[in-house]
Length: 193
Ligand SMILES: CC(C)(COP(=O)(O)OP(=O)(O)OC[C@H]1O[C@@H](n2cnc3c(N)ncnc32)[C@H](O)[C@@H]1OP(=O)(O)O)[C@@H](O)C(=O)NCCC(=O)NCCS
Image (cartoon, rainbow, N blue to C red; front, top):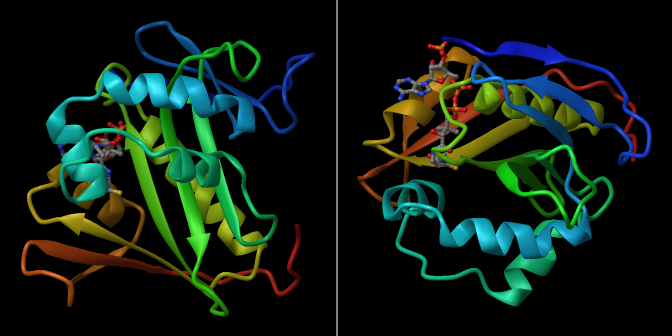
């Protein structure tokens, strides 16, 4: 069964730009920009991931998230990077984080690389699509003309999601087991923050 897709509303005492999404299983989550206080919950959530989820997200095995990686992940650089989480409806730092999508502008370019992970506890309920659409929205508003990512060729879920969003797939130059997926955008001319 599908989630009731995003009901946008702005609950009080929440981070700016919070949206509420109700999943098919009845859970209510907040979609909101990542906050520095999310670092500990994200690190904790990483411990619960299955090896295959980690492999598909990072393209190789990863045992733990380094402090420097986490710091970079939760501290976005305005105009250059963006990350959005699906988290419990609690203040950042108290909320478990079930999914995260981020993009990083390629230095000096009008392209950006995306990455996403929706944990299996909340997968299959529309979150992946909702988060990817927020990345596309942000990219367009910030003058990015091409969104791209590397996906393992056995990652049917991500390949199907990307194709459903209009990405095209190409063989990756990095490895024969990787696909390069690209979405050409028609950004608004003005660069926001
Ligand atoms: C890929 C991933 C982000 C999908 O997230 P999700 O929340 O489960 O996806 P959604 O429920 O929004 O599904 C959206 C679309 O994706 C595709 N999809 C999702 N899961 C799928 C599956 N198991 N098999 C085939 N297609 C699937 C479908 O096209 C689906 O649309 P539909 O429901 O209308 O058929 C999630 O499985 C994940 O995080 N995987 C591990 C990490 C990873 O692979 N990251 C990508 C590399 S950066």
